[in-house]
Image (spheres, one colour):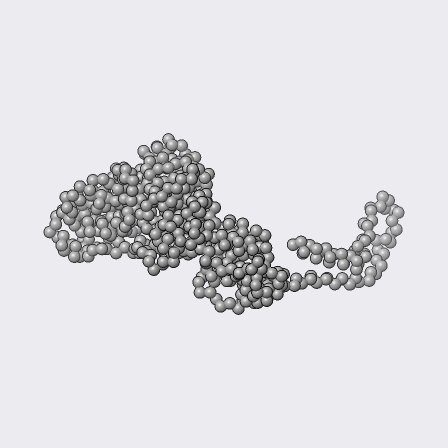
Amino acid sequence: MGSYKKLLAGVSAAMLLACPAMADPMPAEPAHPDAAAVPQNAATAEPAATPPVEPAPVAAAPQIQDDPVLTAARAKLAAEPAADDEHDLKDQKALVDFYAARHGEALWVTASGVKLEAKALAAEIANAGNYALDVARFKLPTLADGALSMTDTDSLADAEIMYSKAALLYARDARGGRIPDPSEQLTTNLDRRPQWIDPKIIIEALAATHEPDAYLRSLEPQQPQFEKLRQIYLTMLPKDGSGRLSPAAKRIRANMEEWRWMWPNMGDFYVLNNVPEFMQYVYKDGQIVRSEKIVAGLVDKQTTIFSRPLKYVVLRPAWRVPESIMVNELWPNLIRGGGMMGKYGLQIRTKDGARVIDWRQTDWGSTDIRNYEVLQPPGSKSVLGHVKFSFPSQHTIFMHDTPDKWMFKPATRALSHGCLRVWKPMELAKMILKEDKGWDAAKVDELDRSGPLNNEIPITKEIPIHIVYFTAWVTDDGKLKTFSDIYGHEKRITQALDGQWNRINKGRDHLAPVEPDFNPEALAAKSRNIDDDDDRYPASKNATLGNIIGNALGLDY
C-alpha cells in the first residue's frame, strides 16, 4: 500500500508540472458588495478560448527483479507431479500458488546464500524431538559452517523448496497430522481429528515474520497440560542419544499426541470427562470448579471419545433404548415372553412415535424389532434418574443420573453400555443452568419435583462437553498421575507413532448397523415350551439381572 501511495503522489506531481493552470488555479471571485458596479454585459460576455491541455503520461511502476533462486523454485514446483497423499497435495498446491505470486527474493535462500530466517527455522525443526515429534520426518538442506555446499541456482532452488516443505510438514505434525484420521486408522471409538491449519495460511504467516522458529512453536498445543506433559517427557528422553524411548516416555508421547487433536479453545466454561480416570471436571475461566466421579462404558461397550457442545439439560427424562440393546438384549427376551418389558416399564412404539404397539400380541420370532423404537417413560424405574445431559452425536452417548449408586464405589468404573453416569448430577445441572440462564437452585429443584416430564431445557451458551482419554495427567504441583489403558487407545496411538500400523487392533466398528447375534426364528422355536423368560438364566444371574440388561438400565438386583 505504501508503494501504491508513492506511485499516486508521483503521478499527481507530474500532472501538476505539466499543467500550471491546475497547479495554481484562479481563486474564486468574491461576491461583489455593489451589484450595480458590475458591467451589465459581464454575464453574457463570451469566455476567452482556452487551448486544450494534453494529459501527462503516467510513469510505469518499476518492475521488481526476481532473484534467480525464486524463479527456479517457482518453475520446479510447477513442474512437480501431483502428490498421492491428500495432505501432501494440499501443501504442494499452497507452495505453487505462493511462489507464483511472490516476487523479489525467495523466502529462505537467495543467490547470496541462506537467510537468517532459514537457519532459525531449521534450528527449531531440529528441536522437534523435544516436542515428542519425529525429527527424521523432516528433510532439510545440509549446511557446512552455516552455508550450503552447492551454490548453483538449481541447487539453491532445491534447498528453498526443502525448507518450505519441511515447515509445512512440521505444521501438520504439530497439529496432530501424524495420525490424520484416528477414527479410521485406530478405532471408531476415537472420534478425534488433527486441528489442521490451511497450508496457505502457514506459508503466508512464515513469509510475514522474521521469527519463523517462534511461529512454529506457536503451532504446538497451547493448553497448559500439554506443556506440563512435555516437561515430564524431557526428563525421560534417553541420555545416550540413541532415541529409543522407554515405555513411560511413550505413554507421555501418546498423551501429548492426543492434545494435538483437542479443540484449541476448550471453552470458557466446559465439562471434561476423563474416562481412564473415571472422573469429571468442570472448568470455568481455566479453573476447576467441580470434580466428581463418573461411570464409563464396559470394555466391549466403550464410551466413545469425542467433543460436542451441550444442547439440552433434560429434567425428569424419558429413555429411548439404543438399538444395540434393543436387538441383542430385548429382542431375545421378547421372544421368550418379554418379562423385562414389565419389570422396566418399557414401551414399544412405531418409529414416528405415533402409536404404542401391544408387544404381547406380536410374533417376535418373525417381527424385526429394528422397525420400532423402545422407550422407557419417566418414573421411579427410570434408568436416567432425575436428569440427562444431551450433546447429540452419531454415537448416541450422553451423561445422566442413575438409581444405581453402587456403581460409583469401585475404583475401576467401566460398568455401563457407553453413556456416562454422573455422581451428584443435579449439582451439575444447577451449575450449568445458573451459567446458561442465571437460574438459582430453588428453581431447578422445583422443576425436578413437579416440572414437565421429559423437560428439555435448551442451552443457549457454548458449553462444550469433552470426553477425553488421558492416561497421564500432571497436577498443578508437578506430580504425574497415570491411569490404566482400559480401552487400549494409548497402545494404538503408540503403535501408530512407532510405525507399527499393521499391529493395530481396531476392534469392532460401533457405528456399523446392528445385527442380531442369534437367529430369531430358531430361538422362537426353541422357546415355545418355555413359559417364563427367566428360565433362560441360571439362578445366580437372576440375582443380578443388571447383567442381562442392567448395565444399560443401571439397576441393581
